[in-house]
Length: 579
Image: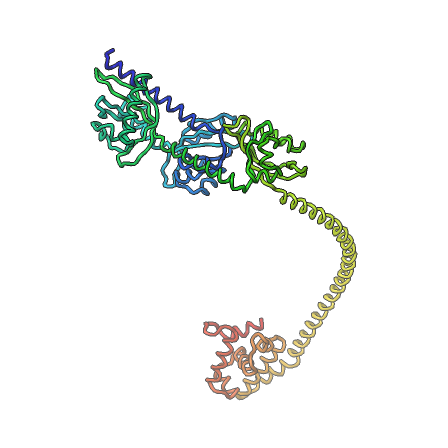
């Protein structure tokens, strides 16, 4: 193997070693479940997507970074199953991880899948998840690894040696001139491809001249003693913006010339998260000092090392008594609540936090006070942590009063039920009497209908008798009169007499004068002549009226019959009234 080949092999090993060290640091930074102080603080970190989700596939709580990264509203992400947003090719492996690992209580580190964005595109997310099997839920942290995926793909295509690296790499010669950068490094510093090669490494430094000299001196001493240097660098991008990287620098010999290789990871987001954490601590301090709720630092032995005034006011002790060490949360807890404390300590030991629960404390004066309590562990307090308590005595009194009122109401309901039962029995008696009367009325009604039917039959018989008498006693004489030679007026009147006799047995005239049609006497007279077949001239001569008058009456008759303006025969319509 040639000398140059050996140096390249060494470079590869050093690059792999640096990558592994950076990965270990990333894992250490992400796996922080045991050090949760304030869950809300995590949900406000701007750069990380933090969530709570259940095993059924739904988010129960998400940080604002979700909506910022994916573009969906918080409502859309909470209402739909998160499986809906996963790329079709990634759904099966995601469901498999939930079922085969998370539901069995196994942590999942750096699991990647693609999520649907609001604009229809997909983004790669890298997940670290911790299950809570008893509650069928999981706590997860994700970050957008889309650009990282793209960078890795570019590295595989452009350079075999650096194909699997996600960090930025540059090489500087003894004169401080940049001789090589990978695409990630160029992107990290905001330069186009090949733009950095040949430039002085000073263009990357954001420190002032004196600080830069001290930094270079420290790097050279560490290289001489250890063979490598690691630490944070303050860098300047092409657009002059400043950002932070974690760098690993080692020496590389190419021929007789020495070079320095640096592998750098952008930790700006991490630094911002640390700053955010500092701000969150400051906010917690303000909450502590505001005394809106009681806050205390505790350990499992029962000691309370620090507490705010609100806590002391709830339990009735002074700050001087707290500082002497006589305030003991175990001694203040009535024996009947010991099982709740043990369960809470087990939860904190397992998950770092416990669910809020209610219990009483024994105050200094011996009285009891109801409180709502929650607690979490802290890294810097062995077997202990921070807790909050809220005085809920007023609420408990209200609940007791409500229970008393409910009991009183139930007693009144029982009494009222007895009264209603008595009233119901009396009502049943009245109903039976009403049923008897109803039956009698029904029987009388049947008899009344029989009488009505008999009356109708009698009326029908009378009508038949009248018709028969008219046909036998009047029609024969009319027929004889019609056979005798008569003038036209006499013939008309005879026809009218015959027609009107027929109307006696058929209610034609009564129909015409009914409230429904409201025919006048003259209109009834003309309608009868039309029904009998008389023409307008015959009607004029008989009634001694003008043609216009006959025409007007005809129109009024058609209007009242509802056939005005229609091609309907008036005589047929009048005859149909009989039928």
